[in-house]
Length: 234
Image 1 (cartoon, rainbow, N blue to C red):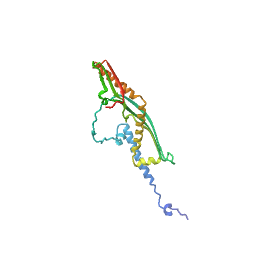
Image 2 (cartoon, rainbow, N blue to C red):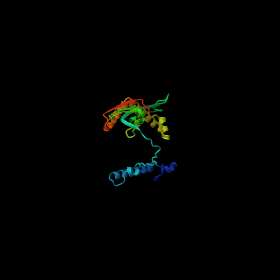
Image 3 (cartoon, helix red, strand yellow):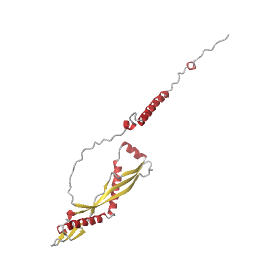
Image 4 (tube, rainbow, N blue to C red):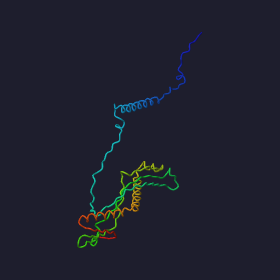
């Protein structure tokens, strides 16, 4: 007597439910997304579809208010010389007992700016101009040339690199720190001002002012013009 074995379902006999594979659906979604991105990229290359820059490009909006005139100051100084300066600022801030990788910053900044030197003609005293009776000889006494405040040029100044520790990165993530940029700007201005004091700009300004006055008075008929500098106050 022969018996035939009927096919049996092992999963049903064991009482276990068939295993589902949810990652198969996830792979389908990822595949569809990759195909869409590839289509957009190819379309942008072939100019058939707008490029990714056109879809997600960054736009800049200037929402600044109008500039307001606060005051007007009459100038009597003659700016006779100007110097262009550049300085490399290496500013490092660290914390005690902590490595730089944890807490500390180091900024490398290139600062470019100008410093002017001028002679204040408005401080010439009443006896500061002596003219002879024939009006052919003149002597002018002027105050010493002075340096102006250094003016940092934002178009020519830039940060080369900025290294930050882990805690500083976390702090910058939650809030901006504009004082860090202000610190390197102030340091660059200070170094430029110190360099201007040793550059001979004031001597150049005094020489140019004397030549300007000699040329001006010479066109008015003066044959001899002498310009002297000192601590004259108006």
